[in-house]
Length: 127
Image (cartoon, rainbow, N blue to C red; front, side, top):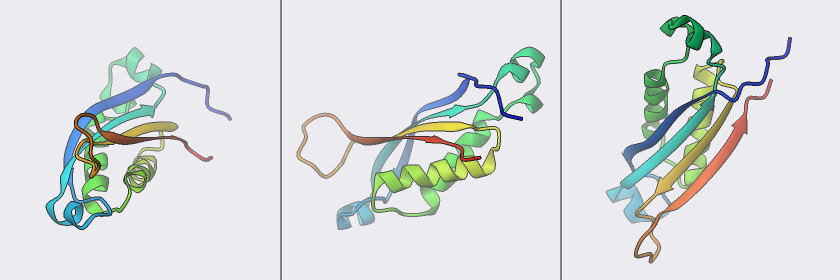
């Protein structure tokens, strides 16, 4: 039976981490700040109607998964960091049908006075 579409989502925004991802040797040795925005498509009608935690995916548990995936493996590219997080969330939470993730790197090694470099992935669970 196909799942019904739901525009519901769990949102974690502006999560800050310190990491050693990057191509440059300074990035790998000194590290830098990263910020992550994550939207997870989850049908929230059951917890909305029942008010029971057992009917939903805990955003605290999703945070722990994101943190572990971010810190567990050093990557060269922020695209790979994001995909690693997506894979970890899909593996841990079968209820998550789609993910939109943005990884922001405010101290990217480019000559910018203000701003940040970022990527965004949109992924759907493959049945």
